[in-house]
Amino acid sequence: MTTSNRQTMMFEYIQMQKVATVAQLARHFNVSEMTVRRDLVALEQAALIVRSHGKAEILEQQDIDIKFSQRAIKDLACKRRIAQLALPFLEKASSIYIDASTTAYELLKILPDTRPMTVFTNSFAAFNLISNNINIRPFLIGGFLCKDHNTLDDETSHDIAKKIFVDVAVISCAGFSFEGAFNNAYPGNQIKRIMIGNARRTFLLADHTKSSSRGIFLLSSWDEISHFFSDAPLESTLETVIKQHGVTILT
Image 1: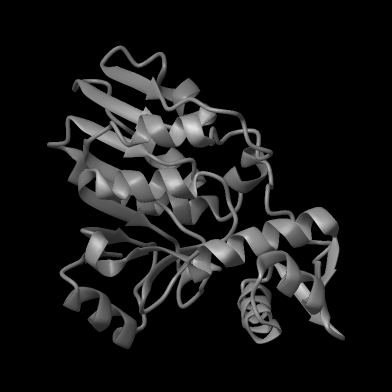
Image 2: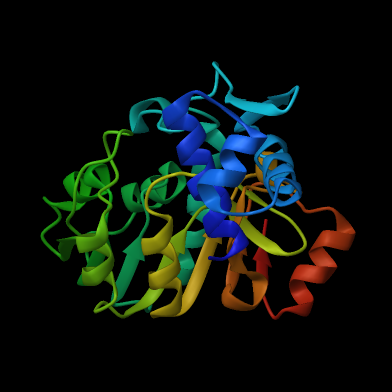
């Protein structure tokens, strides 16, 4: 089991139990208490849990499965600026994957209805948005509906995604830093990883609030990203590192 997978499973276990001790987690995952403590530090840094006196518990105010409708209105102006930046780069794409993020949803809103295109998505909201566009062939990557009331994600979804190849994958993330794009325990991460591998180009859309931020596991390295779009300029050192990986940056 990889570190990122164990940390994700550890978070889900704590989420289910509400509180868990270091010793309890070590027994459950068959690892040392030192390994558990390192994993809990990572989870705490991602603002998913709080540690105290040899135990870990879920932050009461943290809602990992926040509804899509609530996320959609946060930093809306930033998301719309990013969508406008990315739109011209889809001009020659005949097939795209759109993830279940609200930033990618804003890009779908402004897709022209004058050019044929196939859009694959595991976002219920995205599918509904484009279903009446006569020039777009929408494909919903099926599965069970997650608690965010928008994302479809389970083993069936993953099997379907493995058979889909697109010109462009459009994704967002919980945060990005020198290593790449990170996510927390949000649904749909595995589908994103599959589609990144199955796309000729991958567009990462992320606003300035996610800069120099990490999640509990790496979603993609910069080597897997072709274009990065944000609403504000990046810190110079971070921008230099990203460009060294061949990423085209638009802000």
